[in-house]
Amino acid sequence: MKNLTTKKLTYVGLFTALAFLSNYLQIPLVTPLGNTRFHLGNVFCLLAGIILGPLYGGLAGGLGAALFDIFDPVYFTSAPSTFINKFIMAAIAGYIFHKKSEENSKLRIAIAAAFGQLAYILLYLSKTYIENYFILGLTREATMVEIVQKAGVSLTNGVISIIFATILAIPLLKAVKFE
Image 1 (cartoon, helix red, strand yellow):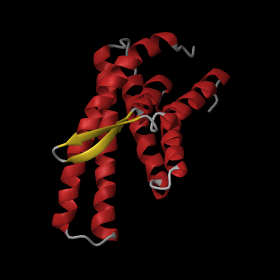
Image 2: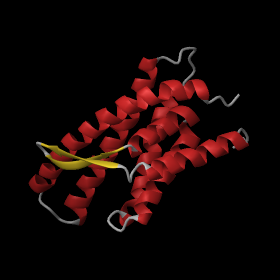
Image 3: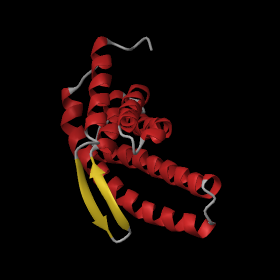
Image 4: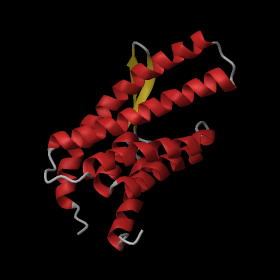
């Protein structure tokens, strides 16, 4: 925490607000596996990790997404798991991007975003499995049907988030300097 500057704290607040607000700007998507919505929440969680690093990016992404859940009665009970999942997503993206290397290439940004997004999808599907099978008592078959449906939709959202995060990270990394 000793390298937390006022500038970095300001960016944590900014990315928290962006992750929160971007969930309200939704585009409904109809897929063969079910209906979903695309929002830029995952994009800003990934960007938070890439720009701010694993710890501060994880906090910004996790807090922003959890605040959205807290203020929406549909998702209220999901806020703690959302915080953990989005924190991990941003932290993994930030960790991979900030590993010691001389080069900040577009490919490196895309790889960091892809691993962060993949981690989130696996956590989200695991949560669905635990809820449906162990808590709700659904059969394994019924649980797996929902997981397959959610996996297809999540992968679609994930690919879109990776593309947007990679495109937006390129100019942001040039503009935001902490040293």
